[in-house]
Image (cartoon, rainbow, N blue to C red; front, side):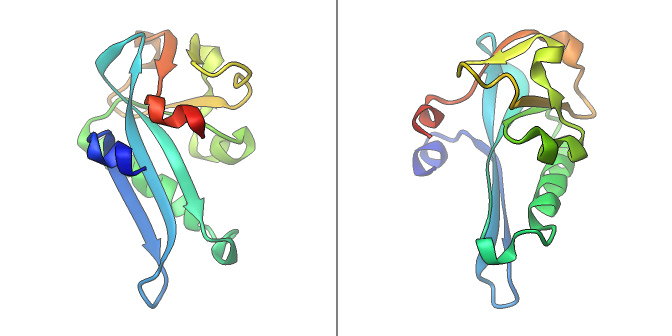
Length: 138
């Protein structure tokens, strides 16, 4: 994560805190490209984490909703994520392969999802979405 920050790849990071100001949740969004187009204004959601004692209380959902709202305000076009479709479906994510999109990691078709923001049209892009190489070791 530090290398992503140092290289300026995060476009948005948000935290949730408890009453004492301790961080209990985190979400980050980094730049991605589609077929090498680094100007596409797409971002990847990763990571999303909530401390175990605070899970199942809506904290992760609030972070996702707030993040999507902020990305809309900033003018980004789409968000991609590799994660549980049962979780991300509630926010409007759909399987990326239905839109002709793949990611660089094989075997992720059932988990790779996309969400069009207000300024985005998924029909404008098809092909391979590339996350930062820093995610290759995750």
